[in-house]
Length: 60
Image 1 (cartoon, rainbow, N blue to C red):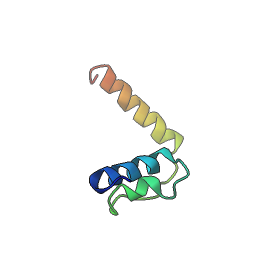
Image 2 (image 1 turned 60 degrees about the vertical axis):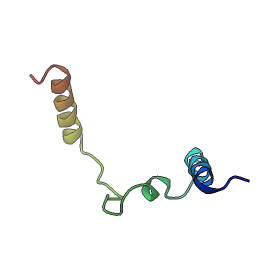
Image 3 (image 1 turned 30 degrees about the horizontal axis):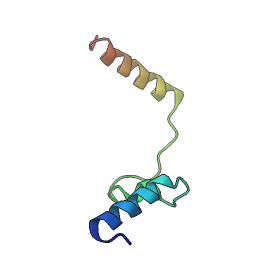
């Protein structure tokens, strides 16, 4: 039987390995992080893509 810190690590690893674990990601982040987001619009997606391309191109 695993005890102490190793038991906590083993429990965390098994939880991460189970994609069906309820509320998996949100348990690992602070309560201040929003849980739901609006669906991004095509305009926003295009704007973000342009910005990222600009960064890759050296900020031009």
